[in-house]
Image 1 (cartoon, rainbow, N blue to C red):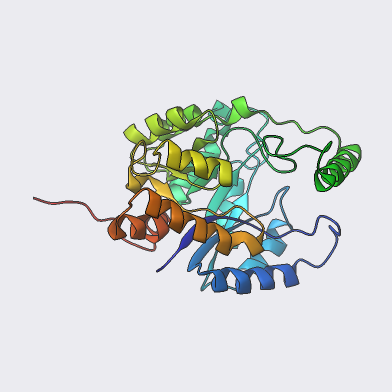
Image 2: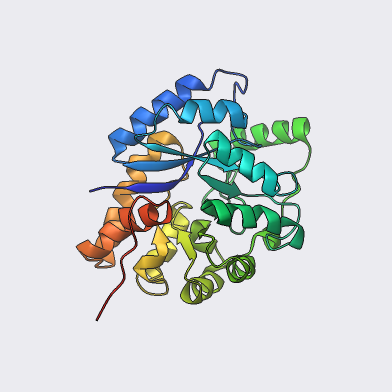
Length: 293
């Protein structure tokens, strides 16, 4: 079984942010391969991980497994900057935490150049997660959650409040972008995220160049099964696998998805597409196939 993982963040040591990132990337390559990942998009640069220059130098050491994807802020990365990232070796873009909605007119040159270069763009969708999941725990009853809250408050004290809003990262914005750039390969993360599944399904239903990754953790995975999102609201050609988790949890994610596919009675052909072919076609490793009479 070949697995294409579209959503792997460059590993970071939050307790020691100045540590040499090379050993962490070396370990990621080993862990991902052992978990069964055949190809994985490593998201780096900008506010996430090392600089673009350092990131590409490290990720490029593993061309057999990793595809370098640049995390960009379209307030700063315009079309010319996208060209520079391409020339450095980046083959995709990732957006998150934007200051204005994704379909802001000023952002269009970024997408236009990505379309011209054949760079897929992964968009975070909805509320930014991480930290304490208050739907399952709370610092008043969980010592680990209390420690995490202390770390979050300390980080906020160093960095200040975060300028982010879920309304700027709606799947409906992808419809605008997909219409304007019909050859831009667009991936929305987390099946659109909670509260956005119907919007995401509507965009995926009618836009040939839009897919959604299934990362986001156990809550989104539970919804994917209970609401029959996989192969139901979303055709299997419209979904891709993404782990978006600490490296040591990638294999656990893969095992959970196998169980989900069993529950949903996903056949072998559809599984191959979900695990590998959709992502591989988006990134040009497989030629798309179409039915013929």
